[in-house]
Length: 205
Image 1 (tube, rainbow, N blue to C red):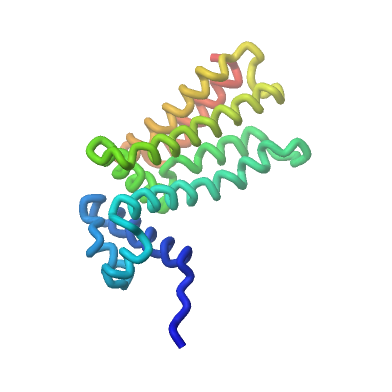
Image 2 (cartoon, rainbow, N blue to C red):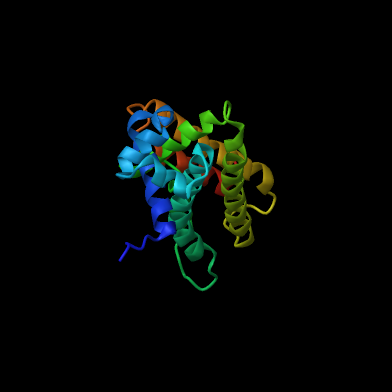
């Protein structure tokens, strides 16, 4: 009897192989041959699940986004639930921290994401996915900020639209700095900068 293969699981396994190759060697090494070798498959098997290299790269970008989104969603549900009784300040910090390279797994994710983001300059087919992921992050930060102001955690006169963009830019900047200069931006410093910014928002500075 032929072995039954779950196509969704196989596609995700191939995407994981891409992430592993990119994490170790860079995006330029994520050829179909190298990905197939990493996944323990023949190139023909890869082509059975993905029409071409671009489709594979876009699917992998979405898999990376989904991985982060799953972690963020748990914090978001606690933060936005009116009956949760959660410490909103601490939960907000932990939610935003999911976007930052504060441990080995998130450092690898950040490096891979930056590799994909840089590739959009020469591979336009990747740009819509990258833009969608960035817009999703912007929307989440804006939602958290609006909820914080509604609950009284932020001043009424705060320009939530502008401050949401400023906070998103801070997260992006910290990620880039930590990826380029990990020794100068250790996790403790990254957390300190994030906390100082959140404290400044509460005081209206």
